[in-house]
Image 1 (cartoon, one colour):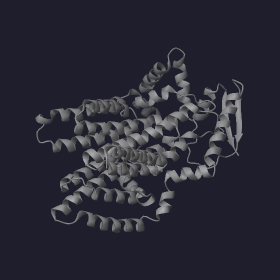
Image 2 (cartoon, helix red, strand yellow):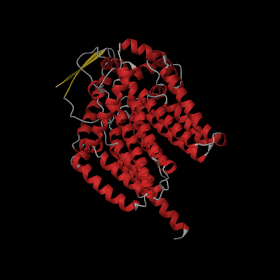
Image 3 (tube, one colour):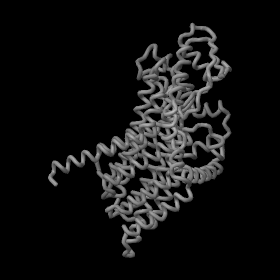
Image 4 (spheres, one colour):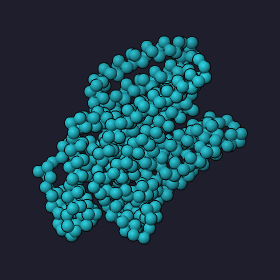
Length: 496
Protein backbone atom coordinates (compact mmCIF):
# COMPACT_ATOMS: atom_id res chain seq x y z
CA UNK A 1 0.00 0.00 0.00
CA UNK A 2 1.47 3.37 -1.01
CA UNK A 3 2.10 6.16 1.48
CA UNK A 4 -0.76 8.40 0.25
CA UNK A 5 -3.30 5.61 0.61
CA UNK A 6 -1.95 4.74 4.06
CA UNK A 7 -2.21 8.36 5.16
CA UNK A 8 -5.77 8.57 3.83
CA UNK A 9 -6.78 5.41 5.70
CA UNK A 10 -5.23 6.82 8.87
CA UNK A 11 -7.18 10.07 8.50
CA UNK A 12 -10.42 8.20 7.83
CA UNK A 13 -9.80 6.01 10.87
CA UNK A 14 -9.41 9.03 13.13
CA UNK A 15 -12.49 10.67 11.62
CA UNK A 16 -14.37 7.47 12.42
CA UNK A 17 -13.16 7.49 16.03
CA UNK A 18 -14.14 11.15 16.44
CA UNK A 19 -17.57 10.44 14.92
CA UNK A 20 -18.13 7.61 17.43
CA UNK A 21 -17.04 9.87 20.29
CA UNK A 22 -19.52 12.50 19.10
CA UNK A 23 -22.35 9.96 18.85
CA UNK A 24 -21.69 8.71 22.39
CA UNK A 25 -21.66 12.26 23.75
CA UNK A 26 -24.54 13.61 21.65
CA UNK A 27 -27.34 12.92 24.18
CA UNK A 28 -25.49 15.03 26.74
CA UNK A 29 -25.00 17.80 24.20
CA UNK A 30 -28.78 17.80 23.84
CA UNK A 31 -29.11 17.84 27.65
CA UNK A 32 -26.91 20.94 27.76
CA UNK A 33 -28.92 22.61 25.00
CA UNK A 34 -32.06 22.60 27.14
CA UNK A 35 -30.35 23.74 30.35
CA UNK A 36 -31.92 26.44 32.49
CA UNK A 37 -30.34 28.56 35.23
CA UNK A 38 -31.27 28.36 38.87
CA UNK A 39 -30.22 28.81 42.49
CA UNK A 40 -26.48 29.70 42.60
CA UNK A 41 -26.55 30.89 38.98
CA UNK A 42 -28.73 33.81 40.05
CA UNK A 43 -26.97 34.47 43.36
CA UNK A 44 -23.65 34.67 41.53
CA UNK A 45 -25.13 36.98 38.88
CA UNK A 46 -26.44 39.24 41.64
CA UNK A 47 -23.06 39.36 43.39
CA UNK A 48 -21.08 39.94 40.20
CA UNK A 49 -23.35 42.80 39.13
CA UNK A 50 -21.92 44.87 41.98
CA UNK A 51 -18.40 44.62 40.51
CA UNK A 52 -19.51 45.10 36.90
CA UNK A 53 -20.28 48.76 37.45
CA UNK A 54 -16.61 49.76 37.60
CA UNK A 55 -14.75 46.82 36.03
CA UNK A 56 -14.62 44.82 32.83
CA UNK A 57 -15.81 41.20 32.72
CA UNK A 58 -12.51 39.57 33.77
CA UNK A 59 -11.70 42.13 36.46
CA UNK A 60 -15.15 41.79 37.99
CA UNK A 61 -14.87 37.97 37.91
CA UNK A 62 -11.54 38.16 39.75
CA UNK A 63 -12.93 40.62 42.31
CA UNK A 64 -15.90 38.32 42.89
CA UNK A 65 -13.59 35.32 43.28
CA UNK A 66 -11.46 37.19 45.82
CA UNK A 67 -14.49 37.94 48.00
CA UNK A 68 -15.86 34.40 47.76
CA UNK A 69 -12.42 33.07 48.71
CA UNK A 70 -12.49 35.22 51.83
CA UNK A 71 -16.08 34.56 52.85
CA UNK A 72 -17.43 31.27 51.44
CA UNK A 73 -15.09 28.75 49.74
CA UNK A 74 -11.73 28.37 48.03
CA UNK A 75 -12.80 26.95 44.65
CA UNK A 76 -11.05 29.71 42.70
CA UNK A 77 -11.41 28.13 39.23
CA UNK A 78 -15.12 27.54 39.70
CA UNK A 79 -15.68 31.04 41.03
CA UNK A 80 -13.81 32.71 38.17
CA UNK A 81 -15.97 30.78 35.69
CA UNK A 82 -19.05 31.70 37.72
CA UNK A 83 -17.89 35.31 37.83
CA UNK A 84 -17.82 35.50 34.03
CA UNK A 85 -21.62 35.18 34.40
CA UNK A 86 -23.06 34.72 30.92
CA UNK A 87 -26.53 36.21 30.60
CA UNK A 88 -29.21 34.19 32.35
CA UNK A 89 -32.09 36.20 30.93
CA UNK A 90 -34.72 34.97 28.49
CA UNK A 91 -33.05 32.61 25.98
CA UNK A 92 -30.16 31.57 28.27
CA UNK A 93 -28.01 31.27 25.15
CA UNK A 94 -24.73 32.14 26.92
CA UNK A 95 -25.13 29.43 29.55
CA UNK A 96 -26.16 26.82 27.00
CA UNK A 97 -23.20 27.52 24.71
CA UNK A 98 -20.77 27.14 27.63
CA UNK A 99 -22.43 23.91 28.79
CA UNK A 100 -22.35 22.41 25.30
CA UNK A 101 -18.67 23.37 25.13
CA UNK A 102 -18.12 21.69 28.52
CA UNK A 103 -19.48 18.38 27.16
CA UNK A 104 -17.08 18.55 24.20
CA UNK A 105 -14.12 19.45 26.43
CA UNK A 106 -15.02 16.68 28.86
CA UNK A 107 -14.97 14.11 26.05
CA UNK A 108 -11.69 15.50 24.67
CA UNK A 109 -9.95 15.51 28.07
CA UNK A 110 -11.17 12.04 29.07
CA UNK A 111 -10.15 10.51 25.74
CA UNK A 112 -6.81 12.32 25.95
CA UNK A 113 -6.08 10.91 29.42
CA UNK A 114 -7.13 7.33 28.65
CA UNK A 115 -5.39 7.35 25.25
CA UNK A 116 -2.19 8.62 26.88
CA UNK A 117 -2.30 5.97 29.62
CA UNK A 118 -2.88 3.22 27.05
CA UNK A 119 -0.19 4.30 24.58
CA UNK A 120 2.53 5.54 26.92
CA UNK A 121 2.08 3.39 30.01
CA UNK A 122 0.69 0.13 28.60
CA UNK A 123 2.13 0.37 25.08
CA UNK A 124 -1.14 -0.24 23.21
CA UNK A 125 -1.46 0.72 19.56
CA UNK A 126 -3.29 3.92 18.62
CA UNK A 127 -6.42 2.06 17.46
CA UNK A 128 -6.71 -0.08 20.58
CA UNK A 129 -6.08 2.95 22.78
CA UNK A 130 -8.89 4.79 21.02
CA UNK A 131 -11.13 1.77 21.60
CA UNK A 132 -10.43 1.77 25.36
CA UNK A 133 -10.96 5.53 25.43
CA UNK A 134 -14.34 5.29 23.69
CA UNK A 135 -15.43 2.53 26.07
CA UNK A 136 -14.46 4.78 28.99
CA UNK A 137 -16.44 7.65 27.46
CA UNK A 138 -19.44 5.36 27.05
CA UNK A 139 -19.35 4.41 30.73
CA UNK A 140 -18.74 8.02 31.78
CA UNK A 141 -22.01 9.05 30.13
CA UNK A 142 -23.98 6.07 31.38
CA UNK A 143 -23.60 5.98 35.14
CA UNK A 144 -25.41 7.82 37.93
CA UNK A 145 -27.23 11.10 37.37
CA UNK A 146 -25.29 13.63 35.30
CA UNK A 147 -27.75 16.53 35.19
CA UNK A 148 -26.06 18.65 37.86
CA UNK A 149 -22.77 18.62 35.95
CA UNK A 150 -23.88 18.86 32.33
CA UNK A 151 -27.06 20.96 32.55
CA UNK A 152 -26.34 23.31 35.47
CA UNK A 153 -23.88 26.16 35.04
CA UNK A 154 -22.78 26.21 38.69
CA UNK A 155 -22.21 22.46 38.73
CA UNK A 156 -20.13 22.66 35.56
CA UNK A 157 -18.11 25.58 36.89
CA UNK A 158 -17.16 24.04 40.23
CA UNK A 159 -16.98 20.35 39.26
CA UNK A 160 -16.86 19.70 35.52
CA UNK A 161 -14.35 22.32 34.32
CA UNK A 162 -11.87 21.55 37.14
CA UNK A 163 -12.29 17.83 36.36
CA UNK A 164 -11.48 18.59 32.72
CA UNK A 165 -8.40 20.45 33.95
CA UNK A 166 -7.30 17.46 36.03
CA UNK A 167 -7.75 15.05 33.10
CA UNK A 168 -5.56 17.23 30.86
CA UNK A 169 -3.03 17.73 33.68
CA UNK A 170 -2.60 13.99 34.26
CA UNK A 171 -2.42 13.27 30.53
CA UNK A 172 0.23 15.90 29.88
CA UNK A 173 2.22 14.86 32.96
CA UNK A 174 2.46 11.28 31.63
CA UNK A 175 3.50 12.57 28.22
CA UNK A 176 6.12 14.87 29.75
CA UNK A 177 7.66 11.88 31.52
CA UNK A 178 7.77 9.58 28.48
CA UNK A 179 8.30 12.14 25.69
CA UNK A 180 10.60 14.46 27.71
CA UNK A 181 9.12 17.64 26.24
CA UNK A 182 9.09 20.86 28.23
CA UNK A 183 5.81 22.00 26.68
CA UNK A 184 4.00 18.99 28.15
CA UNK A 185 5.33 19.76 31.63
CA UNK A 186 4.23 23.39 31.24
CA UNK A 187 0.74 22.38 30.10
CA UNK A 188 0.50 19.85 32.94
CA UNK A 189 1.31 22.65 35.41
CA UNK A 190 -1.25 25.03 33.92
CA UNK A 191 -4.04 22.48 33.84
CA UNK A 192 -3.09 21.22 37.30
CA UNK A 193 -3.53 24.70 38.76
CA UNK A 194 -6.87 24.99 36.96
CA UNK A 195 -8.04 21.60 38.23
CA UNK A 196 -6.94 22.37 41.80
CA UNK A 197 -9.41 25.26 41.91
CA UNK A 198 -12.48 23.06 41.88
CA UNK A 199 -14.45 21.09 44.41
CA UNK A 200 -12.26 19.27 46.94
CA UNK A 201 -13.63 15.98 45.60
CA UNK A 202 -12.13 16.76 42.20
CA UNK A 203 -8.94 18.08 43.81
CA UNK A 204 -8.58 14.91 45.87
CA UNK A 205 -8.91 12.75 42.77
CA UNK A 206 -6.33 14.70 40.77
CA UNK A 207 -3.70 14.94 43.52
CA UNK A 208 -4.11 11.29 44.53
CA UNK A 209 -3.85 10.07 40.91
CA UNK A 210 -0.77 12.22 40.37
CA UNK A 211 0.83 10.91 43.57
CA UNK A 212 0.29 7.33 42.38
CA UNK A 213 2.01 8.23 39.09
CA UNK A 214 4.97 9.64 41.01
CA UNK A 215 5.33 6.51 43.12
CA UNK A 216 5.05 4.17 40.13
CA UNK A 217 7.66 6.05 38.14
CA UNK A 218 9.98 6.60 41.11
CA UNK A 219 10.04 2.85 41.72
CA UNK A 220 10.84 2.26 38.05
CA UNK A 221 13.79 4.68 37.88
CA UNK A 222 16.99 2.99 39.00
CA UNK A 223 19.26 6.00 38.52
CA UNK A 224 17.62 9.25 39.63
CA UNK A 225 20.59 11.44 38.64
CA UNK A 226 20.66 10.09 35.11
CA UNK A 227 16.94 10.74 34.78
CA UNK A 228 16.71 14.04 36.64
CA UNK A 229 15.04 15.75 33.68
CA UNK A 230 12.25 13.19 33.59
CA UNK A 231 11.82 13.43 37.35
CA UNK A 232 11.54 17.21 37.21
CA UNK A 233 9.03 17.07 34.36
CA UNK A 234 6.82 14.96 36.60
CA UNK A 235 7.40 16.57 40.00
CA UNK A 236 7.20 20.28 39.16
CA UNK A 237 3.60 20.10 37.82
CA UNK A 238 2.71 17.93 40.83
CA UNK A 239 4.10 20.50 43.27
CA UNK A 240 2.20 23.31 41.54
CA UNK A 241 -1.01 21.25 41.51
CA UNK A 242 -0.68 20.50 45.22
CA UNK A 243 0.10 24.18 45.88
CA UNK A 244 -3.17 25.08 44.13
CA UNK A 245 -4.98 22.46 46.19
CA UNK A 246 -3.53 23.86 49.43
CA UNK A 247 -4.50 27.38 48.37
CA UNK A 248 -8.03 26.11 47.75
CA UNK A 249 -8.22 24.23 51.06
CA UNK A 250 -6.74 27.06 53.15
CA UNK A 251 -9.32 29.64 52.01
CA UNK A 252 -10.68 31.60 54.99
CA UNK A 253 -14.12 31.22 53.45
CA UNK A 254 -14.02 27.44 53.92
CA UNK A 255 -13.83 27.85 57.69
CA UNK A 256 -16.41 30.62 57.79
CA UNK A 257 -18.79 28.52 55.72
CA UNK A 258 -18.24 25.53 57.98
CA UNK A 259 -19.08 27.61 61.07
CA UNK A 260 -22.11 29.20 59.41
CA UNK A 261 -23.54 25.84 58.36
CA UNK A 262 -22.70 24.26 61.73
CA UNK A 263 -21.51 21.12 59.98
CA UNK A 264 -20.33 18.55 62.48
CA UNK A 265 -18.40 16.19 60.23
CA UNK A 266 -16.47 13.11 61.29
CA UNK A 267 -12.99 12.60 62.60
CA UNK A 268 -10.27 11.32 60.29
CA UNK A 269 -10.54 7.63 61.24
CA UNK A 270 -14.37 7.40 60.99
CA UNK A 271 -14.20 9.29 57.68
CA UNK A 272 -11.63 6.80 56.37
CA UNK A 273 -13.81 3.87 57.40
CA UNK A 274 -16.86 5.46 55.85
CA UNK A 275 -14.96 6.14 52.63
CA UNK A 276 -14.09 2.44 52.38
CA UNK A 277 -17.73 1.50 53.00
CA UNK A 278 -18.96 3.86 50.28
CA UNK A 279 -16.32 2.59 47.86
CA UNK A 280 -17.46 -1.01 48.32
CA UNK A 281 -21.17 -0.17 47.96
CA UNK A 282 -20.61 1.96 44.88
CA UNK A 283 -18.49 -0.66 43.15
CA UNK A 284 -21.32 -3.11 43.78
CA UNK A 285 -23.85 -0.68 42.35
CA UNK A 286 -21.81 0.04 39.24
CA UNK A 287 -21.19 -3.64 38.59
CA UNK A 288 -24.84 -4.69 38.97
CA UNK A 289 -26.83 -1.73 37.63
CA UNK A 290 -24.92 -0.72 34.49
CA UNK A 291 -22.98 -2.24 31.59
CA UNK A 292 -19.63 -1.67 33.28
CA UNK A 293 -18.85 -5.42 33.66
CA UNK A 294 -19.26 -5.97 29.92
CA UNK A 295 -17.09 -2.92 29.15
CA UNK A 296 -14.39 -4.23 31.50
CA UNK A 297 -14.45 -7.59 29.72
CA UNK A 298 -14.01 -5.91 26.33
CA UNK A 299 -11.12 -3.84 27.69
CA UNK A 300 -9.54 -7.02 29.05
CA UNK A 301 -9.84 -8.69 25.65
CA UNK A 302 -8.39 -5.67 23.83
CA UNK A 303 -5.35 -5.65 26.08
CA UNK A 304 -4.83 -9.42 26.04
CA UNK A 305 -4.92 -9.50 22.23
CA UNK A 306 -2.63 -6.49 21.83
CA UNK A 307 0.88 -6.73 20.40
CA UNK A 308 2.25 -4.69 23.30
CA UNK A 309 5.26 -6.24 24.99
CA UNK A 310 4.32 -4.67 28.33
CA UNK A 311 4.25 -7.15 31.19
CA UNK A 312 3.58 -6.59 34.86
CA UNK A 313 4.82 -8.57 37.80
CA UNK A 314 2.51 -9.57 40.59
CA UNK A 315 3.92 -6.76 42.72
CA UNK A 316 3.38 -4.26 39.91
CA UNK A 317 -0.24 -5.26 39.45
CA UNK A 318 -0.95 -5.19 43.19
CA UNK A 319 0.69 -1.77 43.36
CA UNK A 320 -1.55 -0.37 40.61
CA UNK A 321 -4.62 -1.98 42.19
CA UNK A 322 -3.71 -0.43 45.55
CA UNK A 323 -3.25 2.90 43.79
CA UNK A 324 -6.72 2.62 42.24
CA UNK A 325 -8.26 1.99 45.66
CA UNK A 326 -6.26 4.88 47.12
CA UNK A 327 -7.40 7.31 44.40
CA UNK A 328 -11.06 6.33 44.85
CA UNK A 329 -10.86 6.63 48.64
CA UNK A 330 -9.19 10.05 48.54
CA UNK A 331 -11.82 11.27 46.06
CA UNK A 332 -14.71 10.71 48.46
CA UNK A 333 -12.81 11.34 51.72
CA UNK A 334 -13.25 15.18 51.76
CA UNK A 335 -17.00 14.75 51.24
CA UNK A 336 -17.31 12.27 54.11
CA UNK A 337 -15.12 14.41 56.35
CA UNK A 338 -17.16 17.53 55.65
CA UNK A 339 -20.67 16.12 55.59
CA UNK A 340 -20.23 13.66 58.42
CA UNK A 341 -22.17 10.96 56.58
CA UNK A 342 -21.62 7.21 56.56
CA UNK A 343 -23.70 6.81 53.39
CA UNK A 344 -23.46 9.52 50.74
CA UNK A 345 -26.37 8.05 48.77
CA UNK A 346 -28.73 8.47 51.72
CA UNK A 347 -27.48 11.72 53.26
CA UNK A 348 -25.80 13.70 50.47
CA UNK A 349 -28.40 15.11 48.08
CA UNK A 350 -25.94 16.45 45.50
CA UNK A 351 -25.94 14.06 42.57
CA UNK A 352 -22.85 15.83 41.18
CA UNK A 353 -20.89 14.43 44.16
CA UNK A 354 -22.15 10.91 43.60
CA UNK A 355 -21.53 11.06 39.85
CA UNK A 356 -17.94 12.30 40.28
CA UNK A 357 -17.23 9.47 42.73
CA UNK A 358 -18.73 6.86 40.40
CA UNK A 359 -16.80 8.24 37.43
CA UNK A 360 -13.48 8.03 39.29
CA UNK A 361 -14.26 4.44 40.35
CA UNK A 362 -15.09 3.48 36.75
CA UNK A 363 -11.84 5.00 35.44
CA UNK A 364 -9.82 3.26 38.16
CA UNK A 365 -11.48 -0.07 37.38
CA UNK A 366 -10.67 0.26 33.68
CA UNK A 367 -7.02 1.09 34.43
CA UNK A 368 -6.89 -1.84 36.87
CA UNK A 369 -8.27 -4.22 34.23
CA UNK A 370 -5.63 -3.03 31.78
CA UNK A 371 -2.96 -3.71 34.39
CA UNK A 372 -4.46 -7.12 35.18
CA UNK A 373 -4.40 -8.11 31.51
CA UNK A 374 -0.67 -7.40 31.22
CA UNK A 375 -0.02 -9.29 34.43
CA UNK A 376 -1.90 -12.26 32.96
CA UNK A 377 -0.04 -11.97 29.64
CA UNK A 378 3.26 -12.11 31.49
CA UNK A 379 2.15 -15.18 33.41
CA UNK A 380 0.99 -16.99 30.26
CA UNK A 381 4.17 -16.18 28.37
CA UNK A 382 6.36 -17.39 31.22
CA UNK A 383 4.48 -20.71 31.11
CA UNK A 384 4.55 -20.97 27.28
CA UNK A 385 0.76 -20.79 26.98
CA UNK A 386 -0.87 -19.31 23.85
CA UNK A 387 -2.02 -15.88 25.02
CA UNK A 388 -4.59 -15.23 22.27
CA UNK A 389 -6.27 -18.60 22.50
CA UNK A 390 -6.61 -18.44 26.27
CA UNK A 391 -7.70 -14.79 26.09
CA UNK A 392 -10.64 -15.54 23.81
CA UNK A 393 -11.76 -18.55 25.83
CA UNK A 394 -11.47 -16.76 29.15
CA UNK A 395 -13.22 -13.57 28.06
CA UNK A 396 -16.12 -15.48 26.46
CA UNK A 397 -16.59 -17.52 29.63
CA UNK A 398 -16.26 -14.58 32.01
CA UNK A 399 -18.54 -12.40 29.85
CA UNK A 400 -21.24 -15.07 29.98
CA UNK A 401 -20.94 -15.27 33.77
CA UNK A 402 -20.97 -11.48 34.13
CA UNK A 403 -24.06 -11.09 31.97
CA UNK A 404 -25.78 -13.92 33.82
CA UNK A 405 -25.30 -12.37 37.24
CA UNK A 406 -25.44 -8.68 36.37
CA UNK A 407 -28.92 -8.82 34.85
CA UNK A 408 -30.17 -8.33 31.33
CA UNK A 409 -27.81 -6.33 29.13
CA UNK A 410 -30.47 -4.16 27.52
CA UNK A 411 -32.08 -3.45 30.88
CA UNK A 412 -28.74 -2.31 32.25
CA UNK A 413 -28.16 -0.11 29.21
CA UNK A 414 -31.54 1.53 29.81
CA UNK A 415 -30.36 2.39 33.33
CA UNK A 416 -27.69 4.63 31.81
CA UNK A 417 -28.09 8.36 31.45
CA UNK A 418 -27.87 8.38 27.66
CA UNK A 419 -31.02 6.29 27.25
CA UNK A 420 -32.80 8.31 29.94
CA UNK A 421 -31.99 11.51 28.05
CA UNK A 422 -33.11 9.98 24.75
CA UNK A 423 -36.35 8.81 26.38
CA UNK A 424 -36.92 12.30 27.80
CA UNK A 425 -36.38 13.86 24.37
CA UNK A 426 -38.53 11.27 22.61
CA UNK A 427 -41.46 11.94 24.95
CA UNK A 428 -40.72 15.71 24.99
CA UNK A 429 -40.46 15.83 28.79
CA UNK A 430 -37.19 17.73 28.65
CA UNK A 431 -38.44 20.19 26.04
CA UNK A 432 -41.64 20.88 28.01
CA UNK A 433 -39.79 21.35 31.32
CA UNK A 434 -37.20 23.66 29.77
CA UNK A 435 -39.81 25.69 27.88
CA UNK A 436 -42.07 25.99 30.93
CA UNK A 437 -39.23 27.18 33.20
CA UNK A 438 -38.01 29.61 30.53
CA UNK A 439 -41.54 31.01 30.21
CA UNK A 440 -41.78 31.36 34.00
CA UNK A 441 -38.59 33.44 34.10
CA UNK A 442 -39.96 35.58 31.26
CA UNK A 443 -43.08 36.34 33.32
CA UNK A 444 -40.97 37.45 36.28
CA UNK A 445 -38.79 39.58 34.00
CA UNK A 446 -41.87 41.28 32.52
CA UNK A 447 -43.36 42.07 35.94
CA UNK A 448 -43.17 45.64 37.16
CA UNK A 449 -40.11 46.42 39.27
CA UNK A 450 -40.70 46.32 43.03
CA UNK A 451 -43.87 44.22 42.87
CA UNK A 452 -44.66 40.92 44.55
CA UNK A 453 -44.76 38.24 41.88
CA UNK A 454 -46.97 35.22 42.57
CA UNK A 455 -47.09 32.55 39.88
CA UNK A 456 -49.04 29.34 39.48
CA UNK A 457 -47.49 26.76 37.19
CA UNK A 458 -48.43 23.18 36.27
CA UNK A 459 -46.19 20.51 37.79
CA UNK A 460 -43.25 19.80 35.53
CA UNK A 461 -42.89 16.38 33.89
CA UNK A 462 -40.20 14.17 35.41
CA UNK A 463 -36.91 14.70 33.62
CA UNK A 464 -33.18 14.12 34.10
CA UNK A 465 -32.59 17.78 33.23
CA UNK A 466 -31.42 19.88 36.18
CA UNK A 467 -34.48 21.71 37.52
CA UNK A 468 -34.06 24.39 40.23
CA UNK A 469 -36.42 24.25 43.19
CA UNK A 470 -38.79 27.17 43.84
CA UNK A 471 -41.61 27.10 46.36
CA UNK A 472 -44.49 29.21 47.72
CA UNK A 473 -42.26 30.61 50.48
CA UNK A 474 -40.80 33.91 49.21
CA UNK A 475 -38.04 33.89 51.86
CA UNK A 476 -36.58 30.64 50.46
CA UNK A 477 -33.03 31.46 49.29
CA UNK A 478 -33.61 30.51 45.63
CA UNK A 479 -36.81 32.59 45.47
CA UNK A 480 -34.94 35.55 47.00
CA UNK A 481 -32.12 35.37 44.45
CA UNK A 482 -34.53 35.27 41.51
CA UNK A 483 -36.49 38.22 42.92
CA UNK A 484 -33.27 40.19 43.36
CA UNK A 485 -32.07 39.40 39.86
CA UNK A 486 -35.30 40.49 38.17
CA UNK A 487 -35.76 43.55 40.43
CA UNK A 488 -39.06 42.47 41.97
CA UNK A 489 -39.90 42.70 45.67
CA UNK A 490 -40.64 38.99 46.12
CA UNK A 491 -41.32 35.84 44.17
CA UNK A 492 -43.58 32.91 45.10
CA UNK A 493 -44.37 29.86 43.04
CA UNK A 494 -47.36 27.55 43.47
CA UNK A 495 -47.42 24.23 41.63
CA UNK A 496 -50.72 22.68 40.60
